[in-house]
Image (tube, rainbow, N blue to C red; front, side):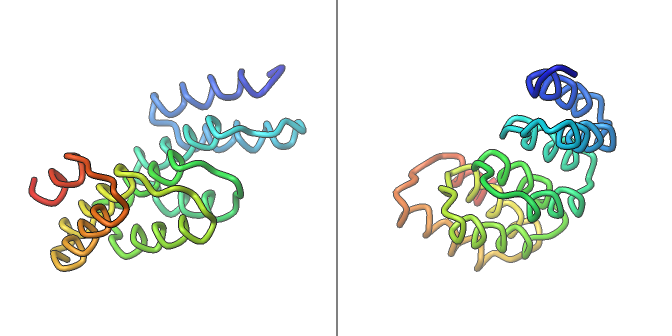
Length: 146
């Protein structure tokens, strides 16, 4: 491909097709070709991994990459909702450490993960964070109650 925009499109198509392995290959190929993947490339690759229930691969990619945006973290949080509530909570802490702004989607995803695991006290504590961070949003309330 000529530039990162073409890789973004190819990775996005792989994600829609559920081909997480090819999405990762395209991301790596862009790097080999000395193209700097952008947040779109990382987000779509992370989402492809998450949608294919390859959350370990998504976590590995996320942990090895600096400068990602909140959407990339949220893609991994969503992937963790049904399988690893503690890891989703760890991601919130990591976001704070690397100064990625936690948004209502981040907290709603972790609240759902805690709720799915029966960790109601943790879910309620996270809802309090929503209030403290002034992220009043029906998304987090429905995650807790729904």
